[in-house]
Image (spheres, rainbow over the protein chains, first blue to last red):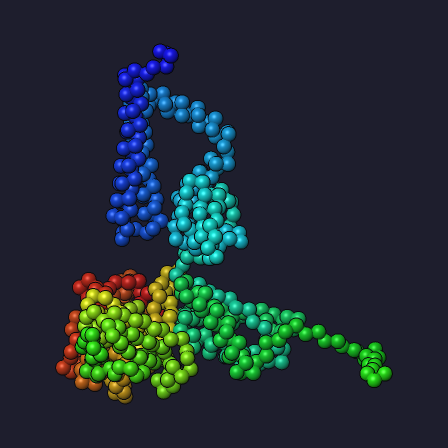
Length: 275
Length: 251
């Protein structure tokens, strides 16, 4: 039993190291929080979060090194061991390492920031954080989505918050017998009356082609990023009302049965319901 | 100014008394202010001046506040720059200068102490973008204007402020201008007997580089007789000068 007894000289460095780690965690946490509030009005949320993490991990690393030193480890030996360990861990966790490296590229590239609205594949949401392994999103239906950094690097990412203005492309069909010029005037008046539609860049009407049942038009209207959804919703309703008021038909699919000269007329049977 | 205490508050907008418990039309803005015990509420919506919108139940915004101190109503100018687009482009030969008169919509601001209760334009304003492309530029309000060259024929409008804009073309080439960016948030608002005025703006186009210079007068324009300052600028410029790329000033 005596061999399991620990004397005070053996235990003391461990207690000191543990105390140092605890102190380091508290100090790092406090300074990181202070830096966040100090930077609150000066830099964006994205840079604030980055600075907070750098400060936290930087201070904690210093305390960890001191704690290891307290336990009698030498930094040079540790770094050498860490190199060997890194190779071993790297082989064992290639995916995680790829995500960490990808995360550094995502942060360095600066194309995504915390608070941006991004679209990755079929997921659209607000960026909550950019972490070592993944980006966390909150979707508009309030779901939490975690996307690995490697996926972000490999796939197409659309940042909807990059520029202050956005264009809504509204597809409209009008009946073949309608006057395109008249429809164009009605659409421009609708855009003119909606205060959320930007005057400049001017709304654009593009003839998309001859559809099966309709002349297909694209009505492209610009709005401020924050008004985009409100403008697009209001505009579609206003277009329907304006077309109804102007007597412009929005057709549904039609199927015409044509009987040419070479064929006989379609036979019609009149059925007597009374038998 | 306005005082609102525990009894029915007395509200004045400039010299006019704003009645309580009835709809008031200020250009396109329709306001209904009511008060109950310790409470003050505002409902507003936009509609055509001769077509009261509450009959149509259009989007109505309602706000309620506790009455804890006097309320101040102030006429203000726009919180964003305004893009003035003359009906026809203006041609200005090299070395010439002209003065245009541009009318912009007034805003109504209600404050209680330092708290902002309401800050609204008296007419619904249309957003626009002013810049060389869709990446560089500035969000502004659009303002179709006659941009008249003299004050003759401009009827007094109690809901608009007139800005004298002097444009100087010091470049070697003539200037063809179909729109220009008016830095309204940097302007002060004045009033004389029958009109509202803003500080005079001078936009200079030089040939030296592609930067333009905007000078904002620190006093009322000479056209404003016996001026009374109604509100200070929303933003402060350094020494009344703003330097911008020319394509962010003239278009």
